Length: 373
Ligand code: MRU
Image (cartoon, rainbow, N blue to C red):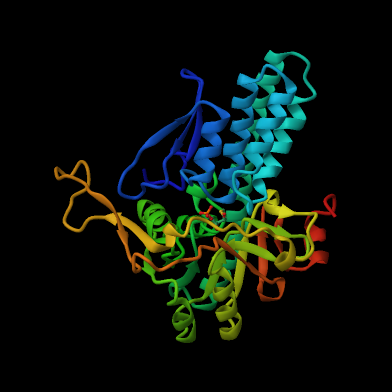
C-alpha cells in the first residue's frame, strides 16, 4: 500500500457489481473496511457520517451519488430532489454542490433514461480523474516551494506542518496539502512533517499519519496546540493546509484550528500555504467570515474519543482488535462542535493550485483563473 494512492483510491466504481465502493475512513487506521453505496440515500449517509470526508472526495462521492440517483430515477423530478438532498449532506465544502451541479447539467442534456444513466457515470468518472490531475499538478507546483526552502537550508530537513487530512484519502490521489510532500519526497528532498492531531475526529493523527507512514515519509503527530511553540523555536519551515471553500477574495475555510495556525505562522514569519483545486473556490463569495457556512456537528464527537484499546492487537497480528469510544468530559457537561473556521486572506502567503501559485488576492487569483472572475 506504499503509495500516494497510485493503486488504492478512497472511492471507485465496481463495474461487476454496479456499485460504488468507498473506504470507511471512520475506522482507519485500526480497521480497513470497504463499504458499498447502492442508493443516493447511502451516499447522503456516507457523506454526513464521514465515512468519506475531505472537500474533493466529498465532491466525487456526491457525483457518483447523482449516478445512483439516475439509476433509480423514474422521473426528472425524483432526480432533482435527490440532487438537492445530496447537496445538503454537509454545508461547508463547496465541492459538493459544484460536483452535483456539474453531473446534473450533463445528465439533463440527455433524452433517454439509459443515456442519462450512462452520462451520469461518465461525468462522475471525469470529475474523479479531473481531481487526480489537479492534485498531481498541485504537487508539481508545490514542489518548487519546498525545493527552494531546502536549497536555502543547504539540504537540511524541511519541516512542514499540516492540519487535518488533505491527503489522497481526502481527494482521490496525491491529496492537496500532501501532494507537494509526496513530490518532494520522491525528488529526494529531506522532509519531515508535523501532523496536527486535529481534534475532535483526529483526521491528522489517524489519517494523515497513516498515509505518510505508508509512503515512508518521516512525520510526527503533535497536539493541536503545539504548532505555535514549534514555530517560535524555528522548528517549522512552512505550513501547508487544504481547504473546504475559498472565496474569490482569498478567505479560506478549513478544519477548525486552521486559523490559529495561520495566526501563529504570521507572528513567526513562517510561510502559510493553502493547496486547493479550482473546484474548491467559491467564485460567488467575497467575505469568508460572513458568508461561508460553518458546519456544527454532534457535540458527542467532542465529548468522546475513539481509538484502539491499549494492549489489543491489530487484525492480522494474531490478537483481537478492540476499538472503543471513550468519554472524556463529565457525563453532564455540554460541548460545542464547530467543524471549520475561516482564515482571512491577509494571513495566507499563497495558494498552490493546478494552474500554479498565486497570492491570496482577488487580482492574483484572477490572473490564474481569468474565465471565472
Ligand atoms: O471534516 P473533514 O474531515 O471533511 O474536513 C476536511 C478538511 O478540513 C480538509 O482540510 C479539506 O477538506 C481539504 S481536503 C483536500
